[in-house]
Length: 320
Image 1 (cartoon, rainbow, N blue to C red):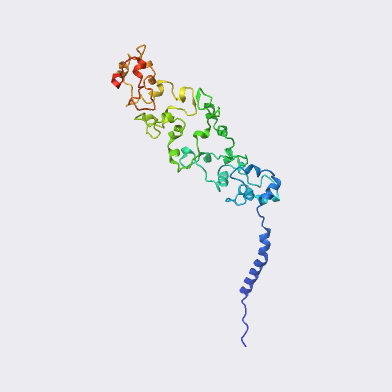
Image 2 (image 1 turned 90 degrees about the vertical axis):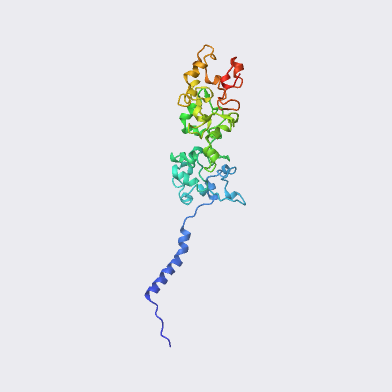
């Protein structure tokens, strides 16, 4: 007869622990609070689902074959605690979050869009602004913008808002264009928009964009001399005509008084006969140089009909 095998005390203790786990595990699972479904949330917040139906945030519970998983608790975290104690303090609300908290909540589904001039970065995030500063998820509009005219930009950019009431300004207050017509939020991979500053202006001002046989190098945004259109124009507003930063000849002299661009005294003397009172310095540069963006006729950007208008020949420039 074989002797009985004794079970070590440590083995008996291990079996007891495992038994306790097996016995108590179900009760632990069932005691954990679960996030409420959409029907539970709408029991108190009736009608908020209607504000989402026309947007990309339509609740998945309303769509039979939804490819996305959108629920109330997708954006409003902490639903389980909120059911036990309905309070605005224990439910996540992206509209009340700021900075990194708001960004992390929304970017769990949406890739944050960089600003056009940010080369992949978003300056709004650095200022701790909220996604809800521009977007309203429950507004019932597919664009999710707070307003279609983007007036929300001016809430923060007050200094820019005052420029739109100047003598010459982009018609933002007239609702013909909006801030987002120029300040577009694009992906950093869209290099034509992200790096081609003049491209924004060219979309509306195609009549002056060329290409020209004779370019005025000042208009090139990529040139070492400056930033293209913005070198001469204030895009928001100016007291001068055509959004110009400087009045009349002062605009031209900001470049044409430096070496290589100077108006030599001999040049002034040679043109005295052109001026009505003999003082060429009082004439506007654009009296003759009308094609300031570029020309297909003259490398000096002169008006092709200049001799007809002035009644004198400009033989030095090939105009008779």
